[in-house]
Amino acid sequence: MGIADGDRPVRIGIEGMGKLTDLQLKKALAVKHYDRKTVLRDGDGLRLQCLKGSAVWVYKYQLDGKVRELGLGPARPCAAQVTLPQARQKALAARADVKARGVDVVARDGRAAKLAETKAAQLEAAQAITVRMACDGYLKDHARKWTDPRAEKDWLAALTNFAFPLIGDASIAAVGRSDVLAVLTQEIAGETFRVAKPGQYRRVAHALHNVLEWAVARGYRPEGVNPAARTSIAAAVPVLKTAKRVNRKTLPTQDMPALWALLEANPHLAKVKALQFATLEGARGQEVLKAKWQDVDLQTAVWTVPQENHKTGSRTGRDLVVPLSAAAVKLLEGLPSNREPSAPLFPKADGTQYSVHVDQKDPLEVLIADETKRPDPHGMRSALRSWAEARGVNHKLGELLINHLTGDQTERAYARHDYLAARRHVLDGWADYLKGGAGVIDLALVNGNGG
Image 1: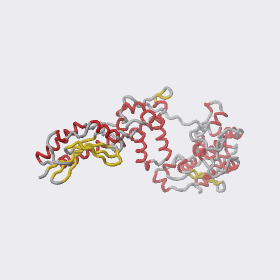
Image 2 (image 1 turned 30 degrees about the vertical axis):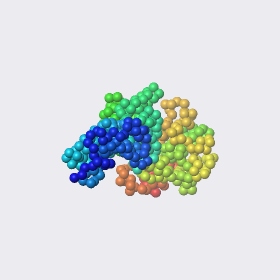
Image 3 (image 1 turned 120 degrees about the vertical axis):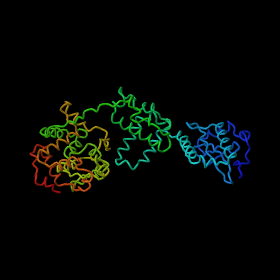
């Protein structure tokens, strides 16, 4: 049985090693990335193999005419780093086993050693992976999970605004509980993050937890307790009592005609036409502010809200088809704005689209000084819903009027009828009521769900 060093016959003792100097090692490790495999030999089969971002100690030998390689650990600074003297001692121990007993140390330690080497190399390479890079990687790996494009943007925006300024450039492998708490307990406008921005806080806390879990699965962090886990941060960030939900302010239906008259008397105010359109159609503010001329067909009196522009689009996977009342059509026909297909229905003074994050309360804030008597634009949808219910409109059609989902997912998959005629009839009655009329509707048509 022949036993030989990978480069030449084996020489016993440390004297066979020692060709690699500390200066050579320092220069080799200073190179952060190797485009091709580079080998630095220390002698007696011990070598440093560098490729891409890793630098690993390897003991190379021959047994029964076959060349074998045993990984001894990473050379770059990390938790599992193996220094040059340690690598020499490990190589000597392995060679002694091979020479004295003919033991194939790769076969003996084989899979475990290889896994340990791979894991150590991954952790070493992970030192260069920042939190920001890990978040990008998580987003790419979970791209198909985002059914609502806005959710992904909001997720990344929360991290960009509240996490990246503090730990964005930190190594994902080194992030600990103190780093997580630095983000979650930061002060914003004199309040803690959790109190000042509860929605953003929840988004950031959840994102950090998931990204750190992803980093472990990817081999960028060692396994262990997630520093963003609820159990890890509970003492420093106690659970807050959930505030009682307050419904948005609305007006009693009998006061809506007076409000409508107030809006009609002030057509010059910014966004007043958008507010009137939303009131006529029972629409949400973001749906109206994002609406473009290409979305409406004045001939058929139909407004098609793209899936990505309405709240329930991510759950239904469908565009929202909304019937336009005669009053809504007349309002649109009277708009002086540019009617290019891609132009917004209700643009700003410069012709561009309003930001969906801009509150739509402006006209009401100007017209109704008393905050206690001022309705919320979104809450005004409930005025339509209450009025329709009082007129005898059935529950299902009442929910469709304001684009609320009804039934479970299976039921909605089969229930594809839009009931456009019945909905339009109710909206025509609603418009008549707002303008001081009786608001009469034909319940036979409505509750018969005429399509």
